[in-house]
Length: 430
Ligand code: ATP
Ligand code: MG
Image (cartoon, rainbow, N blue to C red; front, side, top):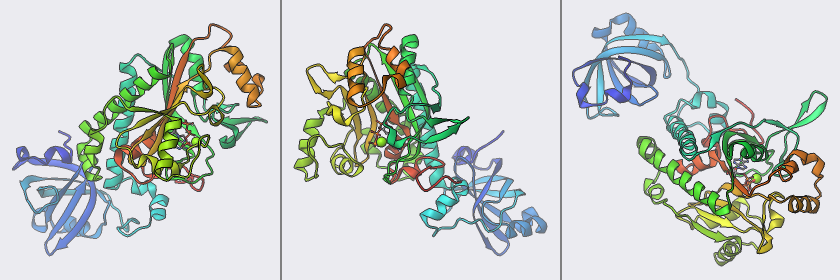
């Protein structure tokens, strides 16, 4: 049987012979004994290699190789309270598969060094825990949408128009013409609701974000949805269900990893429905009351959001933003057209915005007049405009920054720790 370390860390295995494969996590020699701490994808276990049991040749080889050498071994499990995970293997056979010498990463390395060596740092126990949480977040996103009647779909990465404003577009040469990397699948998803009604996609979005914050990447993973016949409140309901679903999935399935990262799980367990809804106007008043330098009509930057959401214990929906600070496609509130029927979801504990969403303009005249106000040429958006000509329906949607969600759930101090290979203004390698 192909056993993993996690499986054999149990009283059931005491006295049983097991075969394990993995990498040397730590190693130390005491005379005729070498203590190897072996790691695999699941956990670590101490392995005791005695010269008399494996022979002088193998013992010498094992003594020579360094951490991160790969090997397979065989031996009996016994309980050992002094071992890092409570059990150890009394090794009878060891076979070095891929030796490693002078592994570059040791304890005291700087953050920059670890980023330059991310291809090796992904092996760390810390990254292993984060990457597992990340995998569970992606699983849960797909599960949620599939359980709630959304069809998965795909949008192109090469596009010709901006969704979130021209300033953050990445231009790419495209056979003598210009194309851009997509900032959001939203407009394409809007076209697809006329066929599938409820759609979602999970894909990268690209934004040339010049502002260096702890929560901006130039390439991030975006989970986006659009639904026909949905109003702002309907979308917010789906979103809060989704967030609670994802958090529960991680709390249930990733206990060990959250514990390893020292995440305060009680704060996650505390997240339940419904989330508070707060109008932008009220949020500004609240921000002013705690001394944030902001006035009505200002957009919230990373620093403001940090100061505000430090005071939150649960996520909060902020609605009714002034239309001047939101993109043209948001539907103005018929009762007060100076604000739009939108929402941002702000994560607590200082994490800030993780979702931007809202109701889309569905009337042709309204869309055209908003485009004119913003100085946009409707010809550039002919297919987006067409949707309002042929059987338009009220609809709403959202975009969730998956890396930001992971950052919050795992309690990380920077978004670069939430993704295997972060892309920022200064980094495109490894
Ligand atoms: P911000 O104001 O923080 O830049 P935004 O208003 O530009 O965010 P949206 O256009 O609403 O964001 O995008 C939807 C979601 O995508 C955001 O709520 C966020 O979670 C995520 N997101 C946006 N830009 C980035 C980025 N550069 N890096 C990581 N995630 C991002
Ligand atoms: Mg942005």
